[in-house]
Image (cartoon, rainbow, N blue to C red):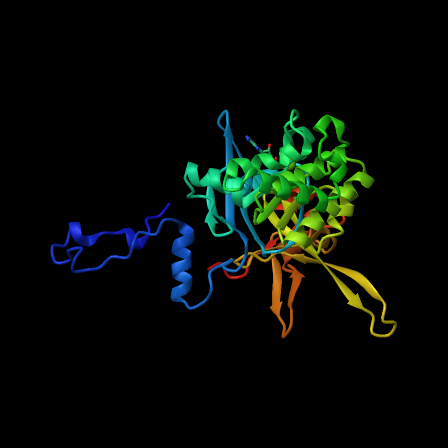
Amino acid sequence: MTTPPDDVTPAAHDPEASPAARPRPAAPSTLAELERRAASRHGRPAYGHDALIACDRLVRVFTTDGVEVQALQGLDLLVAEGELMALVGASGSGKSTLMNILAGLDVPTAGAATVAGRDLLTMDARARLGYRRDVVGFVWQQTARNLLPYLTAQQNVMLPMQLHGGRRRAARTKAAGELLSMLALDHCRDRRPHQLSGGEQQRTAIAVALANTPSVLLADEPTGELDSHTAEQVFTAFRTANEELGTTIVIVTHDQAVAGEVRRTVAIRDGRTSSEVLRRTERDAATGRESLVAREYAMLDRAGRLQLPAEYTHSLGMAHRVLLELESDHIGVWPDRTADGAARGRETGGEGGRESESRDGDEVTEGDS
Ligand SMILES: Nc1ncnc2c1ncn2[C@@H]1O[C@H](COP(=O)(O)OP(=O)(O)O)[C@@H](O)[C@H]1O
Ligand SMILES: [Mg+2]
């Protein structure tokens, strides 16, 4: 890491510049803080200033037996308060790594991450504990990991409230009952997990996660072990929590049905966010009929880098180099028609389909600054 300029103390070398004579700004604690200052000096808001979850060039490297795995490779993600969104991506793309970081269970190697104003890189152990208890709730895929087997559904929901403290037993009982009712689990109140179906267990887990009214609810493949009908009921519970309590919800899922029901689905590829699908209701002007329209967007990072879909680059034989042209309302991207560029395009492009060659080549950089 480079030394932040604000941290340089000339006083030691320069007798004129005593600390008293030259007021020194408080040392910035993190890179994020430095960036916020830089941004405020330029009069524009910092990246993600109005987002509830802001991940900025997040990196997580795991080292096992001397072998490095870059699970997150500069991931950017903003989630607005009150959003219900899905994260999708191939196995091994870094989804769980991201969720563990957001849950406060793991610490990123580099980059910045804030959730509800908490800096996930600089929290000490005590702050981390409070964060996990009060700011985030989580639901895991393994139903058994979410609930204590010897407690009833109601007692499971009351446990985090008890750990939080503050409320009397009667108030906790009432609040837990209301949460279970909201998720249509009245009949499960006095049952233990083994007396509940898989779907009921996951819905109870959602109630447990909501016990201390967290700002954010995280769920890592919560319907992965369920059939599609049951998965639908669990998803309805998430939607209810989002609508009734305003909880911001991020769900990692493989389930197309779930991904298709949220307004925003973000795809992660190789440890980075690669594309987003936004869905909105549109009314046909002629018939007045409403329909759900989905559009896929590519992510443009702050350096201006853009990942082009492999199907597009392959079909036009694009590799290594492309030609850009600025038009009044769009940017044109053309294959490289120079002699060597065209030859490379043939090598790696549509006809041959040598995918590995163009994997790293399908990025466009627009003036790295
Ligand atoms: N604790 C760990 N130690 C070493 N490698 C890990 C660890 N956790 C995850 N990885 C690696 O990081 C990559 C991303 O994993 P993960 O976040 O679990 O992906 P996903 O949830 O999208 O399937 C994988 O290559 C995985 O093997
Ligand atoms: Mg995973």
